[in-house]
Length: 68
Image 1 (cartoon, rainbow, N blue to C red):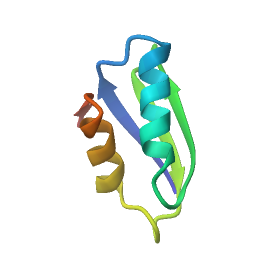
Image 2 (image 1 turned 60 degrees about the horizontal axis):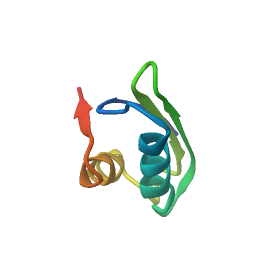
Image 3 (image 1 turned 90 degrees about the vertical axis):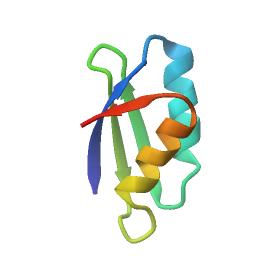
């Protein structure tokens, strides 16, 4: 499954790396792509192992805000 999340606070490559590292360690996550310009995070994951809430929690845990 793919999930596209709109994320406030993405301003640089350090932000990209922080998000990729945080979300990438979750069980079931296959890939994490971060678009600085669009301020979006696209996560491909196995929904049997990870939930959308897990992705959101992890991104917020490292200091970013999800826009609904």
